[in-house]
Length: 199
Image (cartoon, rainbow, N blue to C red; front, side, top):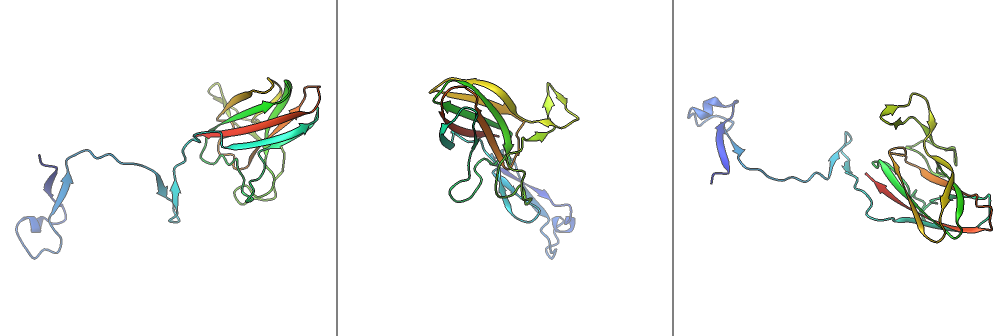
């Protein structure tokens, strides 16, 4: 079986005619078979390698907040021990947030700007501010700024993981954090959270 076929290069017909002194070879090899390729990234305009993002395989960003009184809020996730921001959505379109509480009842959940550091070289940030933007809903793009994610009264079950899928609204948010408020009307609760980003 022939895998390569030789053809004449358009820049050197003289070579193809048999003149051996031509400076450029008059033939090129053209592959005649299918070969799989793997795309893992690209080189940007500055020559830096940029890998293609892949979805998280598990909930790998976790935090536990204990003794949260009724009416009190937590901000999650917090900074990593090395000072890096854990929930960077750059390259990700969707996110799962999982919440496990020790008390059942209503909780307010909203997406906010994370603290400390910078957002694509801009600082300081409006820490804890509700995230605002323009998004599509039912295939129609909004033309005015609105809250990207806010649920003022989400009923959670005690001692199990309630998992919520947020599609598109928080895509590429570089400094994402969630505010969760205990509105159960009961005693203090423990709130455990976990996150998984999806491309």
